[in-house]
Image (tube, rainbow, N blue to C red):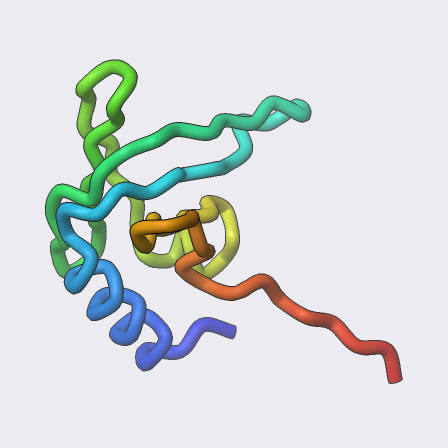
Length: 93
């Protein structure tokens, strides 16, 4: 379940990373996926905007897209790309 605090923390994280390079990965359905290099342009209360490097277009995503894992965002930290949200670790009891 997504909490308001999760969304608020994610908004803050993305707001602090404006101007950084990212890789956005997601599914287009029917086993088709996409992966784009982009730069975080702006962050708004409900969405954030990335500018794709291949075609210079702006694409918007909601914070819930990331929290529900519909879209994965990897941020470039100067050396490598790291996921914005760590992967879920499941343990069997």
